Image 1 (cartoon, rainbow, N blue to C red):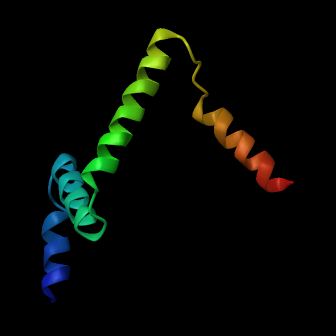
Image 2: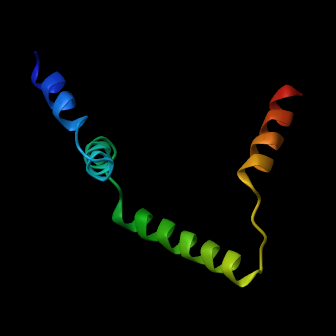
Length: 75
């Protein structure tokens, strides 16, 4: 058994939160986050969250988003 297969076997029995941490950590090694860009995305996310919480904008349900996407694809 290769090291990678052994590692996957061991990781697969971890609790979900720990598996998420492992996957996220591995993905970050493939696509490192630029700190400046990451900070910009955090600012955007916080602004959007505040817009939703304050009622300035109305959210769209995932069901509606997928329905619209299907409609556009079927054109």
